[in-house]
Length: 187
Image (cartoon, rainbow, N blue to C red):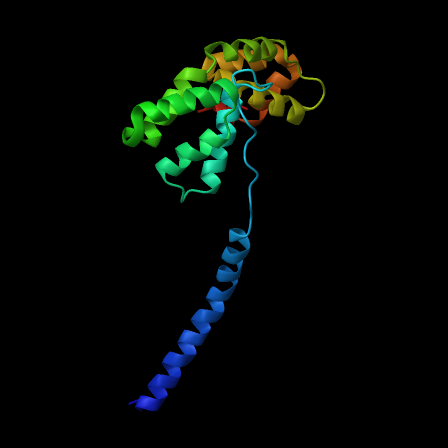
């Protein structure tokens, strides 16, 4: 049977060991909290980059600061807008006031500024993309262009088949005897 002093010593030792294990995690969290992410660029309809690209940077930023709530997100996005986009934002804000949620705001701004034809240029470029000696460089460019097109399955494989030399196209089938289950496995 253990005495109360021995029990207290064992519990104290256990607590000290647990704290020692937690310390690196706490220090890592403190270092992570000090990280800052630069705001996305300002946006207007006449920007040099597309709305879809800009909106992706907004979503990445929001993911970095997940504690931001809806009305704060709306106000923050407003600070990133200029000229006609800012006029659009202020008009919507005045019109809806307290009924403005992040869900309806993000849907409205995407509807207003998303360019449905944005996939046309990447589709043309993807059709013209050719393998030039580096599979890594080809796949990087392919994935970047396909972010706007979302080619999948047969359409994706057709684009790759047209870009690759026959010798490269035959290689995966000599190494993998089964069919590819998904696009990423194929790539």
